[in-house]
Image 1 (cartoon, rainbow over the protein chains, first blue to last red):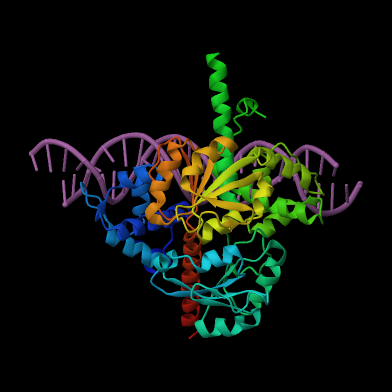
Image 2 (tube, rainbow over the protein chains, first blue to last red):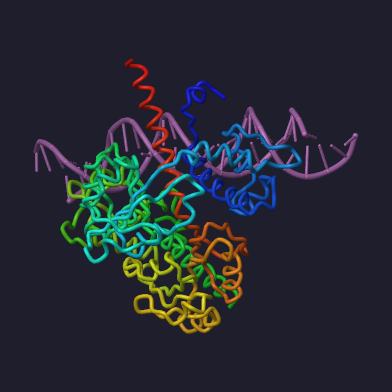
Length: 227
Length: 227
DNA sequence: TAGATTGTTAATCGATTAACAATC
DNA sequence: TAGATTGTTAATCGATTAACAATC
């Protein structure tokens, strides 16, 4: 542990940090299944399609140590990652937009694994207000400030159409929201101190499509060669 | 254009490739709004919270050139990215699991921007089969092979609970699916030639939570100093 | 103990940034 | 033309990989 780490500003290489999220998800899953207590860098690497050296290198930034010949003790590793990502601090989030995606999010069960709770869902459509989504009632937008105050909400998920996403974001920023989890395809214009996470759902599909194209090309070349 | 590019195996730095997806999304949005025809690296950088040098460097891997003093011509740039990601090739995708998330995906309007169409949605719950999701009827799993053959489906989205995700994946691989778009939290065990894209929705939230923690810490330190 | 697996250092590779010439 | 913006090269910085000693 160097000086910077002691000051509590634990710094990870950006690439490592991204993978730590994935390890967290994998370990949570293994922990919930409860079949194994130890896992080796080789096994993790195999599941995630990366190299075991990479896994060990990533873990070397953590305090948890593995045991030679045994591997890493899952509860310990997961506890450290939980700490790192603050999945023990309970955060309340609100959802703006009770369309299909907003409702899916409100019903999502995985939030409990990361110490997060959806406390309200809002819509501007009078026909939707008052309807239930799981255990939550759809509320009108005017109730947003009250809910933010009541539950000390810092995070809001935007699940409205592209055309009204910016408007929703401005509203939320005005109410003091600190982070926006943006499920619309709109790239939002926000003050620099507001955290944004864009979740344009089609992005992953672009990667798949590109890989399929590459594969088709290399297969076409192969069959040309053998002709 | 070097030799490798001429062979059609256009290679990009991995980091650049990831950003190209984001540029694609941004440019699609600007194109649809139709207000501007040209955009500078400075403007793009500002919207995406990166540097203009980065944007220009990324674009230097493309064939499209910008005009000094003017910027990049959006239709040309977008056309090249469309080509790259194969958003002109129409791909059919199927959705496994007609829960909230599966239904949200089936209703998602953004697929048309990337040349993709949802052709069917499946569930194993007899109570759901026959119900409509938008213009699609929920079908039983036994119909999967027929639909795959009929529409030449290569991509399947898995929207079932974690506990049955592996089973669904095995089924799809058996039916010849080439790429799996995995919305379950399960890390799937798949043959190496199957493309996987994991979309664990909570991953983005982990990043937000971590940034909130860092911010709280640095604010706490600041207020300590001023005391 | 022998052997498997971790942890770390050094070398390589890749990505970003800085600087500035080219150009519209 | 003058000036703004692109495009590219070189320098720096960061990430991955290889190799192997440490260790349970």
